[in-house]
Image (cartoon, rainbow, N blue to C red; front, side, top):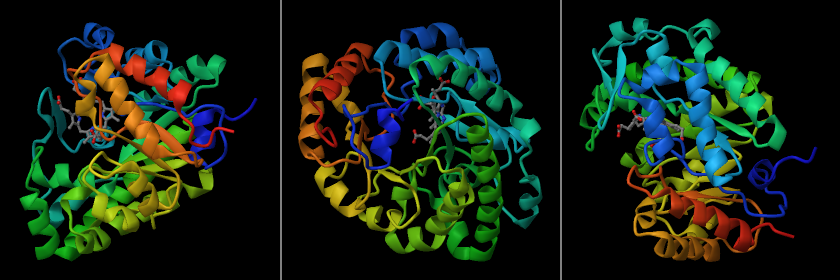
Length: 344
Ligand code: CP3
């Protein structure tokens, strides 16, 4: 069978239509998600492979997107090793005892496959369901810097003051922390691919909080090592962060196949800075005004995407919970019908 359009676009090859998927496509914008999900911690839902598989499939069925993304979370491996993580609805990951000193390195033990059996069982179920349509499953992890920001801050933050203080006050300890996260992340990603994930996205969501010097010193090397640690698996990789306009040329030096572009940079300019295949970058807020406004916004992105190959349509960050699924349905149609990038 031909490789699906998503994988070919990621590799910069020609396609018969522009592929599209949405970060956070499985989630609270879908009524069928809210109906299944109940009120417990999201980590409980993720621990139930049949439920997690069904949630992964919901947006694939409804939208006809060109890839599924595993229903999981960037904190799952750290929960699995017993670091003391919960995900509080409406708030995000919270750590009972945040990482603060060298003694905490011992709490970041290597991840074993048995600790994430629920994840690989979910991958098995999803891959079996996707086989008919040859739709690829994207596995993912948080990039070391973004994960470190949660482990050190202990909760979502806008300032990143605790982690920035730690990295500048004790760069050696920070390097040791990232070493631990690199090892765990590689194991987590390799397990997903071994069970059939056909692409990987590395979420460095909060890299945009760093200056270029900080990114180069404190984030990029660990991201590079993660990507090198899965390079032999030969699956396309996507590196993504938010507010990364100034960082894109540096991020592009990491060996990912694709660079994810958030909405702060015009897509054509983002493509120039990346100089490799790109994914993005419709502002998720522009999906909140109904179908006509959403479709018009998607057309602006398609115009900036141009005709050159190596383009995957996505939002510039995750789907907002208030998004009407009808808007995303209409956007998938317009991308498939009108997208020209790489179409021969
Ligand atoms: O559809 C998909 O994209 C797959 C599912 C997915 C989730 N988390 C499920 C989830 C993915 C790819 C993630 C990654 C993730 N988790 C990131 C990187 C992507 C990004 O948004 O930048 C980050 C930073 C996290 C940490 C995290 N987990 C946050 C900030 C939140 C939101 C808290 C809230 O309630 O608003 C979560 C919880 C979470 N993870 C939800 C979902 C669907 C929502 C809460 C729920 O349904 O209980």
